[in-house]
Length: 273
Image 1 (cartoon, one colour):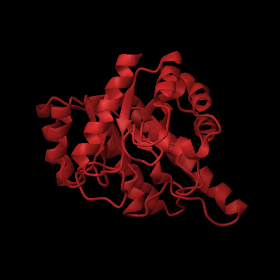
Image 2 (image 1 turned 45 degrees about the vertical axis):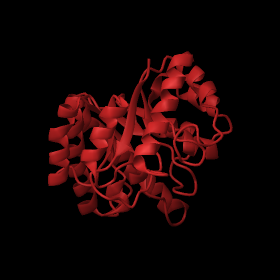
Image 3 (image 1 turned 30 degrees about the horizontal axis):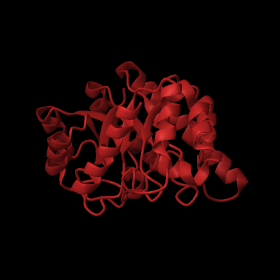
Image 4 (image 1 turned 120 degrees about the horizontal axis):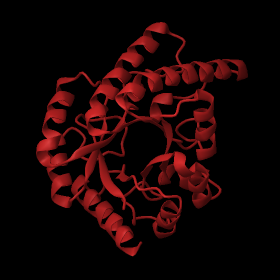
């Protein structure tokens, strides 16, 4: 059976689809009360005091961490593995080490999503940026291996990035990096925009599918849009996926209601299958 998780942030964030951003205490309490197995943490700086406070409180709420999202390092600080600035690469590697250290005790994964940024300039410039990103992600994966931590490549839709939009592109990047602890994160909001066939994309990922976000077509809680989650869950079971179903969703009409709606649908999917 699948496990359930909801995405929160200990600080207010420029990245919008997060619940209880800046109010982690209420986020943990709500996750516990609604029966989520875990929280996904969207973090900017793993060394920040607020992150340490959050980390020390999670187990006391009977929760664990499913994954750590890293995109705030790009959205807030402009740090990306495509950068040709050695100081940016060094700072990002240090943050990744911090994320790995935080993830390891929970058996959590670390997400390479929005942090990729966008490829810019002419074809040669973009090719160089991609090469730097591949080298950087290879470094991160090597650092994570002794800790037993996986990295997740999340395809993101074309309106947010031009660097890995589909599951097949994520698989190609993973092959290029060549690390066994690098898997795919499939997000149904992005897949609804980019994939010709969402079931086909999940089947293509197969055993390399490491994590799933289940927002609806409008980025609200699953069930609030037009995605056929029942069909997708049947595919997930068919490929033997038994990991997390994650609610990385807009906090509308408010965080508590969104979290309740999401886990309600997750439970109905579990019971049906």
